[in-house]
Length: 171
Image (cartoon, rainbow, N blue to C red):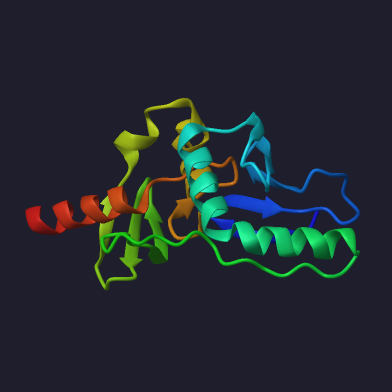
């Protein structure tokens, strides 16, 4: 399925020669939804935070989605659509990260802040973080505006930013 956008570990896809009504698919870890482009109605299961991001992105790109739908029906190559934009001036992104061992990571953000954070306490909470308790799995993160893992786990970049600031102030 052609990917037309990606943000925060969420893949937005659309099939060629698809049946109506016009819609797109969103995939986040094992969760999948279908979103009607004309009405915004959603079918399927998605975590609430991720669903909110998809809805916000949908409202920003409804016209682009309809244009891609017309291309898909005509069996033409689909256009990539920009990832989620935020009007919030304090919205930060992770631009670089290095694994330091255990559950420690060095991070650099798009606003220039950089520093280390230890996420050991965080990975001990919540089912989504359970695989991250293994340091080898934890080290397998990627950057998609924040830290993301193959199982779909991610951490809000604003939280990471706040924790790096706190660690720097206490050092």
